[in-house]
Every structure is written in structure tokens, then in C-alpha cells.
Image (cartoon, rainbow, N blue to C red):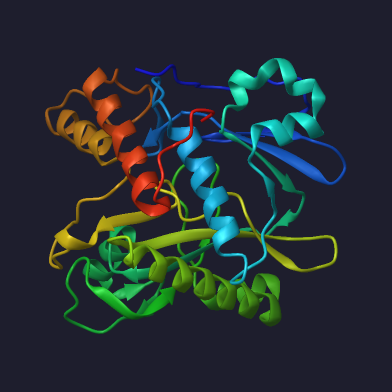
Length: 307
């Protein structure tokens, strides 16, 4: 099994460390995002890392940022290791930590909402609908099945959370916090990016059931797509040939990990809170394989040797 990176340590000022990424100061106009191989489930970060995961997230985001440029401008500069080192020579001795998992981006002022687009009724949206018939307090048609297609897709914003669950909020709440114009632009950009990504993925045999985007304000006031985009961590990818509404769907993400943890929770061997249980090697390998398969199917290429 390829060695996994649980945490990067680079000779740049550390801006913050999230669940998956370290963010470094790369100068007055840029940041360096390094996606580790850390993995979380049920809001708990596991002790073990998943090989290739960080590189998949970075390289898939790089692919989408370039592919979706006409739908929405982004903060993306480069995810090429050689180009990053050329711009930041102090990293030359740390190529092993960059290895396809690092992305240089423009600085922005992040918008304090997750911009979620739901094309299918799943996850927390299904749970709310089943109990209340609503999504973020807004009523939905009666009689919908779990995993049913939502036509048109719904814009379902949420508050950001460094730990724990994001909280769904109404579009009105975004308007009140950011103003009607910014809220409208966020919704329009979110639909444009989701539609372009959904249509492309459909041609590759993948349903993008839902996804979350993040945006940031550039110095000139424009909104840029930031963070990661249409990855297995930020989206639900379903194989189109196995789609069957009326229940949960198989997915190209950390489903093997979730399935294992759900099993040991039901057996009373884990309470669902930190500290996490140790993960068997086969669960780690299966999760890594899911990420790699999603990358191959969507991009049409294998993860490069530098990643």
C-alpha cells in the first residue's frame, strides 16, 4: 500500500488546519492548499489515513476548476508540483509532501455559507423531508421517495462548521446576511456549476446527486469558486446504471468506511464519538480504491505518478 500523508509540515506560515487540508501563506496574493489523506466519518477524524485520497481531491478539483471555467471563475492557479516549487523555491526539499496534493490559489474573502445544490433527495435532506415534508424549512411536494430526482434542482444553503454538522438554512437567511444581490449571484453561480458538472458526469456514467460549493470575494469584488469542487468529499457520486429510487444508493466515496463504522456501532463496539476505532487494512484499501475509481471515471485518466 502506498504511504499515506496524515499531516503536512512545510516551511511556510500555517494559516489554518482543517479536517483534511492545511492552508499555508504563499505570499500577499496567494495561498497553498495541501490535501492530506486524513479521512473523517460521522464527524470524527480517523487515526489512519487513506492512501491517494488527498491527491484525488486536489487533482479532481484542478480538473473541474479548468473544465468549469466558463460556468464560474475560480481561485485556481496551479496544481502542478513543478510549477508550485518554481514559484515557492523553499518547498524544493518537500516534494514528497506536495506530490500532486498541493494547489496554489488566489486569496479571497470566503463567503460564510456552503452553497449546496441538491439534484436528488438524499442524506440530511431526505431525513428532514421524511420527518417534516420540508427542506431547510421550505415545503416539498408530498410522496417523494428517498433518492428521488428533484426537478428542478434545489439551492439549499448551509452554515459552515469546522466541526460537527453544517446546518441547513433558508435562502432568505442568506439574503438577510449578505444582501439580495450577493445571494442571487451565489445561487446563480451554484446552479451554473452544478448543471455543467452534472451534464458532464452523466456522459461518464455518474450521477451527481448533490454537492456543496464554496465561494469567496476577490479584491475586485467578484465571486470566485474556491476550496474544492465536485469531489467525493463534497459531493454524492452514484453509478447511473445502478440508480433505483426508493432507498440509499451505492456511491463513489468513503462508503466502505461508513459501512464498517455503522456495523461496529450497531454491535456496540463504538459509540460514534472520538476517539475513533482502529480501521482494518481492507477497509482502508477499499476506501482508497473508491476515490481512485471516481477520479478515473470522471477525468478519463489514471492518477499520475507524481500524485
